[in-house]
Image 1 (tube, rainbow, N blue to C red):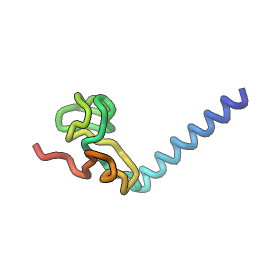
Image 2: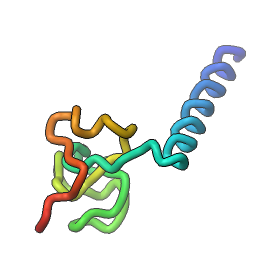
Image 3: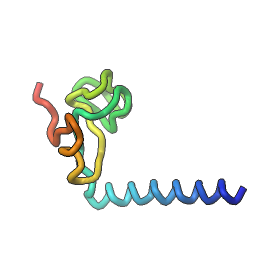
Length: 82
């Protein structure tokens, strides 16, 4: 029981730190790296988060820590122009 509470507390802390980093502007949109159905927000071809149709869709993005996107294979800081 005690280890379950410890794990829950650790996960809660990690989530809160992620939200705080995003609120402080330490996150950038990284296009072209999301798996199908795992995008963070609306794209040119889908209406909301989690609805991209294919892996590495050029208009689908994920929020990543600043400075990380261009280190990811296929990652771009801007959406592909249609």
